[in-house]
View (cartoon, each protein chain N blue to C red):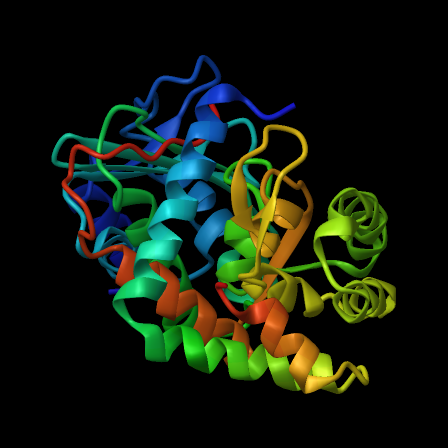
Length: 272
Length: 56
């Protein structure tokens, strides 16, 4: 059996789980019998990777999962995962096909607002594992921190790009000035020095700053790291060849995928 | 401006991060050591860093 035949055979087995997304946004396969078109769309996204292996990797530890390949926008992949009552949709943009690309761009993470806490993180952990084991040419997973905020992504090992870091440090410098009176002169000097350095990895250090400060905007007491980075927006990258980044990602994401709190707790992403 | 639903997610995720660190202090200590290495390389005093990294 040729590789093309094997892929088509597996796509047939996975019908309803690997689907093709039509322009109006519904998940249906308008050309279920058009094998040539299915094969072309699959290989545009995933090269010669086998559908079963891809599906198993991305749905691991999750319940009902659908991988949607948009017909009109072949560079975007929708990963729609339903874990019991929990739902998560991750919109990914990739250079195509995935077996020769250099990155995943996660455009959005959308988790059902009234449901559990771990689906999105499990999906991201699966994505990292998939990239490391089946798509070794992928060197980074990128995402816009607008979805969950810059504090968490810095904690998880994502770093801003150099241009974003320059913009971010300007904003952080302004925020720092508003709480400078709560810090010692040495501490203020340290923050200033960190913000002046050109290394985006300092975002991790900033996220770890646990000294409490009172946020002048709302009088809430929070860690300096949260005060500085919470709600910041930047394009972040998780570099797969950076062991420190992977340690952070796995340490937080995989452990947080285990229930720390009752499943009725809420985690949500933005809608799109 | 962050979407309100997204802001709620940010706050809850931040709480989860705090819970994770509280449940496994060694994990967080290891991260802090890494942060100390990065910051001391910039010439920042260890004592100052420890003060900034400490909860209280």
